[in-house]
View (cartoon, rainbow, N blue to C red):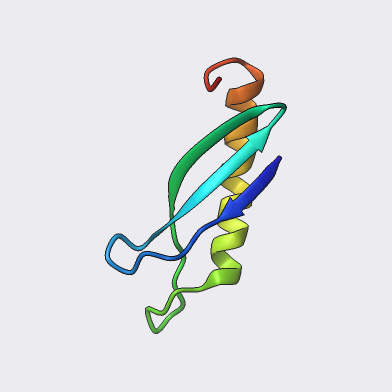
Length: 66
């Protein structure tokens, strides 16, 4: 699964992500992670995107996302 994380949106507190697997492209927003002071945490968000990507890959594999 290839993922591309877009620019953080401080209003929605999300990042747009493009997921590509086996010729299928799926775009969705993912809730961003923040540190204890409330600032956007890019590293933690990337880990969160990896978690979401596993679910997206499974949904692509079973045909829910096509």
